[in-house]
Amino acid sequence: QEQLVESGGGLVQAGGSLRLSCAASGRTFSNYHIGWFRQAPGKEREFLAARSWSGGTTLYADSVKARFTISGDSALNTVYLQMNSLKPEDTAVYYCAADRSRWGPIRTEVVDFGSWGQGTQVTVSS
Image (cartoon, rainbow, N blue to C red):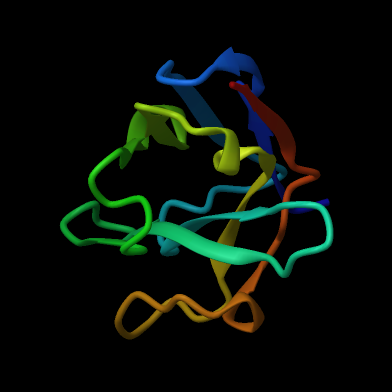
């Protein structure tokens, strides 16, 4: 089954850092834009960051662009999300997904992405 697998979540104190990983399982996603999203309890899933398949273009939500960095390792078929200066409001389940289209600009809407992973929990304590 074609799927992305997230890892790297955990419990961290406010101000701390985590690096999340998104690895492909079943096939390569090297020709797809990859996005990171999160969903807190009782809230809708929200876009955080995305990276073009080439790695040449990145896009961030305003709420995280000063603190989060998306990057990738093509050889490992893995995309990362480095999260710094974490806040309690960053607590959520974090997901990665692949854009359903292999063409066009980076998109940010949840409906435009598929092959969702199972998510990884990030908990930031105050």
